[in-house]
Structures are given as C-alpha cells and as structure tokens.
Amino acid sequence: MISIHDLQFAYADGQFSLKIPELQFTSEKSVVIIGPSGSGKTTLLNLMAGILPVPSGRITIADTAVHTLNDSERRLFRLRNIGMVFQDFQLIEYLNVVENVLLPCRIHPSISLTADLRRRAEELLNSCGLKPLLQRSITLLSQGERQRVAICRALLLSPGIILADEPTGNLDPVNSERIVRLLLEESSRANATLIMVTHDHSLLPLFERIVPFTQFLEAVHPETSRP
Ligand code: ADP
Ligand code: MG
Image (cartoon, rainbow, N blue to C red; front, side, top):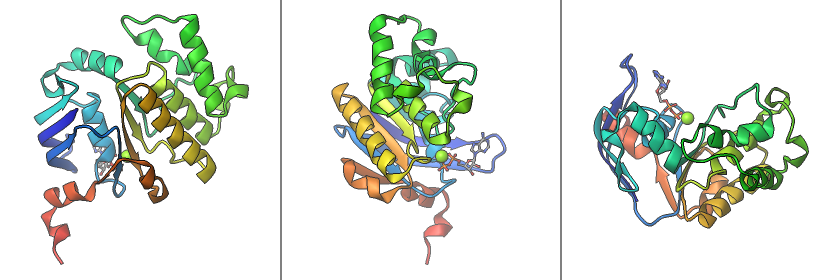
C-alpha cells in the first residue's frame, strides 16, 4: 500500500514545482506512469524512495510515514524496502558488473554477502543476457548493458517496492519487453509492487494500472488545461 496526500514539492531554484493532491496504490502490483519529459516523474520517484525529503504533504509506504523520517532514517527505509532503477543508472565505475549488482549487500546494515546472494546476482545477470560480462568493467558497457546491470542491482534483495525510472529507455524493442517481463516476474515472485515510468506506449498493456502523469501537471499549471 502506497498513499500520497497533499504532496507539494519545489526545487530550490523555484523553477519547477510538483503538486499531487492524492494518489494511492492499494492492491495493484504493477503500475506504469506515463507522462511528458520534464513533468516531474523522476522527482516523484525520488520523493517516494526517500532520496528527496518531503517538504509538504504525506507519503506513506508499507506503513511507514516517509514524510516524517530524517535523512538517515529515509536512507535505511530505502535500503530495506525499495529497489530503485535510476534513470541515469548510478553504477559505480570502479566496480565490475557483478560487484555493482552486489552493492546493496555492501551498504545494507544487516545483510552480508553470501554465496546464495552471489548466485542470485549471477542468475539475474544471466536472465538479462549479461552472463558473459560478469567480470567486465562498467566503463566498457553500452548504455543498454548498463541499464540491465542497474535493473539486476535493484532486484538483488527482492525489495517490497521496485521503482523503475524509464528502465527500457536505452533498449531495443526485444530487450525492452524482456526486461519489463523480468521486472514483472521478479516483483510478482517477491510479492512486490512495481512502479515503472516509461515513454513506451507498447509496454502499457503489460501493467495492471496506468497512471497518466498529465493529471498532476494540470493541477500545477491550470492554464495548460484550458482550450
Ligand atoms: P521527468 O522525469 O518527468 O522528465 P524530472 O522530475 O526529472 O522530470 O524533472 C522535472 C523538472 O524539474 C524539470 O524541469 C527539471 O529540469 C527540474 N529538475 C530536476 N532536477 C532538478 C534539480 N535537482 N534542481 C532543479 N530543478 C530540477
Ligand atoms: Mg525522468
């Protein structure tokens, strides 16, 4: 269960603000958010993940009132509950492919690296077609390969919530569908909720619920909704 109420957020330079009166995900296990570039989709995922603090309003995720947490509490909440696929991947360039996927174990306060987790990392990479690249440096990968590494990293610890920010943005149609099916399968196996942002309309039918982000734009810029 994820609920957002009266959320208002603005970047410090005042150029962009986001206003979401109400948005709830109750029983849906797969949600896709679609909307124009620059409309605040990444900002919303960062607020839900606790990367950005919530300045006004409420975000409650799995019984945690994220808006009440301080910086270190939000970080811990994220490590324990959220698998994040960043739009810009955020891979560590001095680590190889499998080490990047195993990174959540290194930074998690109570999970240590076991043979089982190493095997899981390898299996995830295998299912993304990256088996031959396990030991390769991140700097030698294509954008699409980096994106798939970022997805494996988000899935490693079977988080309850997977937030995937345009995870197919750099992939061809065959790999796009393969990756979305992997995200859906893994989230269903972990009984997790998958919230994915995309521009790709062909992927929408794979999801239980479609959220058009434009509804929030109209709340922020009412003039855009006038004829
Ligand atoms: P989307 O993911 O829908 O493309 P974003 O959430 O990335 O949109 O960005 C929404 C708006 O906020 C854009 O106009 C972007 O330029 C602006 N923005 C994003 N990050 C920052 C930041 N750190 N500081 C100031 N403005 C930002
Ligand atoms: Mg974005």
